Image (cartoon, rainbow over all chains, first blue to last red; front, side, top):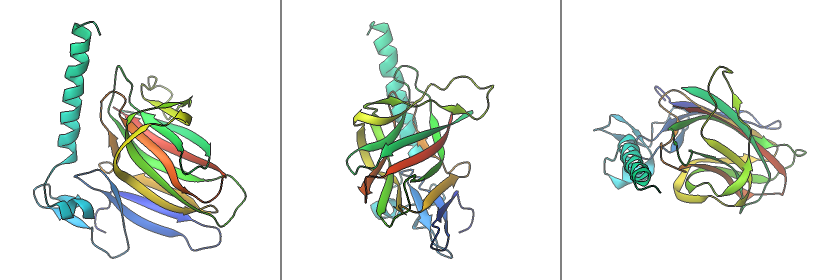
Length: 87
Length: 149
């Protein structure tokens, strides 16, 4: 695929080596293997990036980095509150 | 961003975790898993395995693994890697990486910048590496490479 985000290889001593490009879904951060000359499973237009089949079927744009930042903010405030309250 | 590697080992078991990578409980840092190499140390055989990498919200109880710093000048890693879990991690969500693998084969995945599996800077958040399909109780090994921000 064009601009793969990763590379995977299976090495078996009694079988041909299998190599695959990979990309990471921009919605769920899952790693997707792409067969040669095949397109990604899905594409998100708002993100302008490849997504996995499950996220493509969901049809909703929920960028993973946005979810990560929200989680980190919630956890940061929880830890700060715990410090203030002496927990 | 410092880079580290760790080797995790286990006798393959479909119900038990091979190893886990978790953010620190008090000073969590965002980490990015960018390479994994997995395979079996036992004599070659035609047994089917499936390796998975799944998110965890709690690390469980495990034997700590000594990390190898790729740059000796880097500070000590705050994230924890554990193996041989006596209490399983708490898993959440779907598998982020699913690898079918024959016992005689070795697998390697490496990510380019921007393609890593990200662990948020949330206390105890992490990744667990399992073999939900374990064709034999063989000695299996995985080496993971990650960077901590």
